[in-house]
Length: 264
Image 1 (tube, helix red, strand yellow):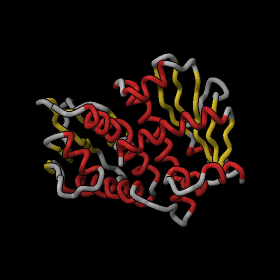
Image 2 (tube, one colour):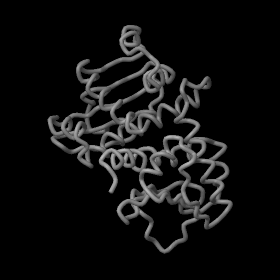
Image 3 (cartoon, helix red, strand yellow):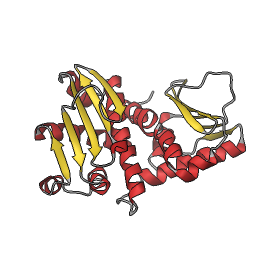
Image 4 (cartoon, one colour):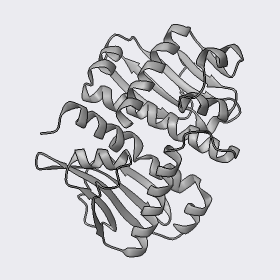
């Protein structure tokens, strides 16, 4: 039986990290071009106590249309699946242990290769230790991290992860947001209220967020996201702008680091 830490780690990967494949396949022109006209079903799965846990993707006429946080049960054929025999092996693989390989189930070789290209691109992006030089990649990486962190916090809360669920239960109706000035496509938010949580992409539509962690440039955001920037210095230099009480910036920053610790 998987430990709680194994379950929480796997949830971060399945509910927050792997869904980023859709963003990468859509936003990276060289990859998006290769999917032109492609219809496919992809899946990544892991076994735990005899039950399959999975995330699967639908590609229709070149567009990644659906990300589903459950095993595929439709009538179509899965074109490519990475099937791990345990959550422990999947977690290790996602953290970079190439000795913990899954079973590669290939329904269509060409579509399998396309899927692996997207997976490898995600790995190269999320394993960067310093901000990339070109702004386009910086923007994409900010989007990936903001989406991952907001979704990861919400997913762990719904599982009852102690630290995050305690924070959410104690909170009234509040919305936290991440953004980069001049790049609205990177924006993501997290709404929490008395034990409930919801992650969203784009600006929160209903009201002004309770707290926004805003950055002056994509590079500044990545200095914090990659844990190589000094938050106090960057705040003093207006590279990091906290719109709301600083104490709430500390709280959401703590939750961000907590999610990151599961994924390391």
